[in-house]
Length: 486
Image 1 (cartoon, one colour):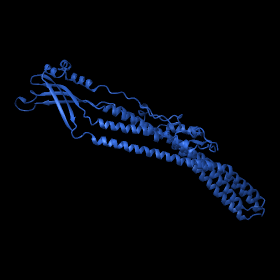
Image 2: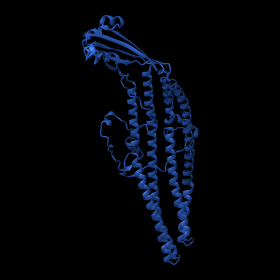
Image 3: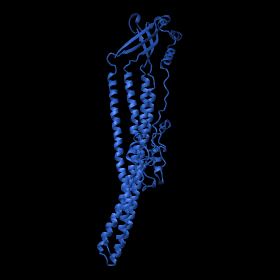
Image 4: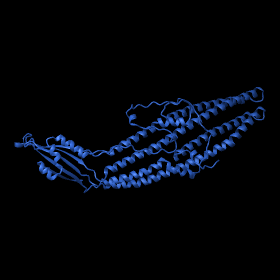
């Protein structure tokens, strides 16, 4: 970009007064260059805007009553070592797990600091361009009268870029919107962590139930082995059947060990959600068998606007337009003004210097950046549509899985489990009476515990489906009114 530069120099105060109306200030301090520099810095630089903390995105109803990690200036000044947390012990509830995790989850803490970084960027955007100081020495080190510094002239001047087109306010707006976007990302991460904790808690509950079933199955297998042994001793059954019963008991004990290992792993996964590498608690407790009716699909779809992945796009579009406005403003050239004092060693005279420069927008008018910003707006519109479609699809899919799990749990509880238990009791009683053989008992036993195991798995699928749905709509299913009764 071509730059036009204009400079006015006055050899004495009167001449300078004819060109510049502020010569009185310089006349008072013409013997003190440092005083002039100080006055120019104060006059040109001005005051920068104070930083105002941007509001964090308003929390969705889901888990809004829980405290979350908040990054503070005091925290950044502390040691960079991982903070120690009070490990939950004994019996832990879902509410306690959520409270621990939302305060101590390291991934959530990362987003909290991202928010502080964005606020720092907002403060930086409010600052004015720095003035420039320049010292120039002329006509020295030559020959004749220009030898040494006797005839040298020294110029001390300050220059300041003056931004036109409201560039500074537009930068501040973009930085403020960026802070709001990070706030939405923080809220999305909070809901994600909420879901991760709830899912891990469900896994522990299910693992505890599976271990309980393995204990129950081992106890029944031992009772069956005792019954078979009595039948063999009485000559009513073959010793081979006793061997089969012993093998079945050994297999059940292996399953019990596997269930124990699975529970230990699930407990560690839950502890990891609040940043711990080991689980100090003993067990978790919750209403695992309690299920709630599923709202209609239309009721759930009406709550999509509460999803942070959708809500953030209103701010995203506003920021893209603000960037477009800034790029158009950058097409307006920014002038620079300068002022200073020139001293001549030969005559010990002093004069003042004033000038300004302005780029000439002959070639670069920032047209490419303006076009790119305009394209980014169109791109964001499509990204917004894609985000809305992705959330819509996720809700529809989660609704189908949740509804299916709810129906399956209800059927298992009311039909399958009572039938399997009744069949097992009848076969066991008949075996003692000689009406059935051991294979019938084993088959009835396997059917019963497969049904119970499926019941536990279906409950876990239901609760995880509910957790996913609540994350997508940003509120608990139990808070939705007008849900049809089962």
